[in-house]
Length: 372
Image (cartoon, rainbow, N blue to C red; front, side, top):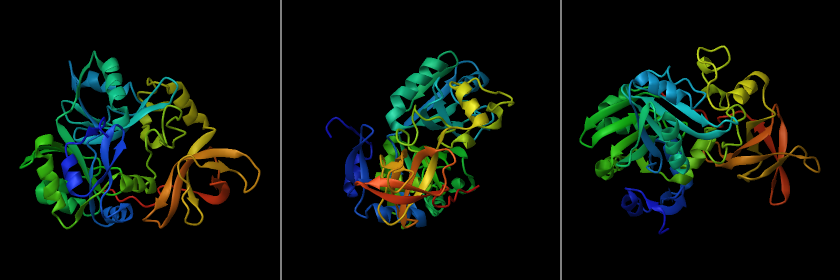
């Protein structure tokens, strides 16, 4: 792991018994002594603390005025940026000229600038993409002196409010800046688990003390990448590079909810984003394939790469699993796959040379609990 980047909280993870593995160029904790299953269930029942400092944090400041910055940023994605009020956050997608997805991200309107969080594996490319396309209207400033932590679960508010009482008033996708004993905290009420919770950007120098202040609370336990993946899978959330990439469009991926009315045909700012011809065409006419949920029968998971067929014997391959595993909260395997649009009923996944039935299922597999 000598060439991997170490997180600022690396020593804390080791102290906590974290099993460190390579992930997106970083040395990351995949699990702690509690184990993936118990970490997953603890997050669903109480509150889990995740170190997601590998993600890219970026500030976009206007060179002239915010309106020009907002318009420029909006031109990179099929998302309504202008409609995001100050103090609010939205899910976004950078698309390419072919209508594929370059990355998915979160962005917040913080009044006089935008704050963007991008995926670790795409961080360098995303920053270059923004610098190339926004040079006339914005300063693109990567944030390199802050950790990013996620506190997720039904007791996340109870725990965090002990340190930052004002977070109790926040709703899903609200953002705020809070001063206190741990420096200036940038907090959003959001996450990647399907649970209520928060993502907190904390100054690197205060990150260890802040994390420890949470971890001494009975509700809070450290959670690794393993449970982060099973939690997001149960929530039906995409993982970039697996469920979405440049070969998938937002419509195929079932992310049409992220394309607001203003950017669709007939909207106030219709089109004007990379890949608009394809994406607007698919919104109007549909797609040949779509991301669908699967509930495999039995206990054996159908993991990423599992081929999916339309018959128990013979037949044809109709798709492939992009994410799959055992869902601790639903006590059964769950998976996502790209299949012909409109596929219903039973399909068969081939695991170790044998085909096993799976039922096409709506997502999320486990109900979400965001604080609206």
